[in-house]
Image (tube, rainbow, N blue to C red; front, side, top):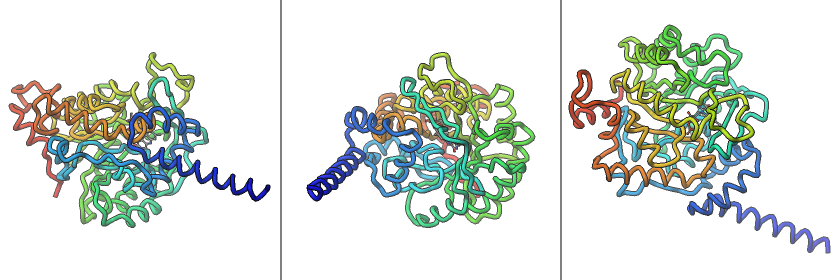
Length: 407
Ligand SMILES: Cc1cc2nc3c(=O)[nH]c(=O)nc-3n(C[C@H](O)[C@H](O)[C@H](O)COP(=O)(O)O)c2cc1C
């Protein structure tokens, strides 16, 4: 009897495991929306996140590669790098560079890892990540939980010769007063493994971090980071990630710094999560402390992209991120001035099929509007063609967006 029970229990467990894996690997959008995601939501949000990273690190993800036909219109060149599509994974999902290849397999055409801090640190107390289901949003106050740069270095070294564009997002340790030092350490340790380097000065969950976006602090930080970058043989493009909660004066200051010859960067990531809480929020967890992302962030981040594109006169390529869950959202970001786009929250709301859907819909929208490439559409809603200081033609715009990597 006992033997029968244990055989039954093992059989049952195997059955549940097999069907769970099938549910995680299916490509069917309806199955994900109606079955897999509701099941995942039975788990605590952070547990579900950790499980997703583990599965992705073993390649147990459905794959939505960019189709050859869509690649024709979606392929793009930014920072001198060739992207099959402009759709990338935003920072925060793969904080320790554990599942880059899994996320590339899922269909992202570049993956940003991090934020990575020099020393390992726990981050804030749990619970620290909340799903706002009704709002298609997330609030997190992880506070840079990181295994530290040595672990990220070892993970990235193991996959060094594999294809795929990897962006490395650097953060600072909570207890280190000298933030500049931490970013420099990150550049020196991880820079050689990066196709793109990002300095994140905009997470709301590390006290004082966002002050680094101030004119003088930002200029000092970039100067030191650029000096450190000179020692690297590969010289990856350097990007700064900014918050959506900036005043127009803050934005002007940032634009002035990043376009100044001495402190010029290669790109901006616009935006991180917001500390604001729109009136429209419905979920009970809307008052949780932390950064809000997903749908309610969309407009704020799009406006910020428009402002930064305008203030930098389209001279600094922008990665647009915040509330993208459809091809139309991605297109809106591109027309507002983004050369590439990223997402995170919609992946946790809708599951992996959202990656394939965004690419498919974006390709269709571009074609319908007569654009031959993503680059041709960048900033088309913002730039009045022919105005002084702005491109006079789509061709000129195309050239602007084909920015070569720095030598
Ligand atoms: C759970 C979570 C953790 C995040 N962690 C980081 C991080 O470590 N570094 C960072 O630069 N951005 C982080 N972000 C911000 C995202 O990269 C992105 O900028 C933001 O969520 C807006 O995009 P979305 O609306 O598509 O999620 C995090 C976002 C979420 C939801």
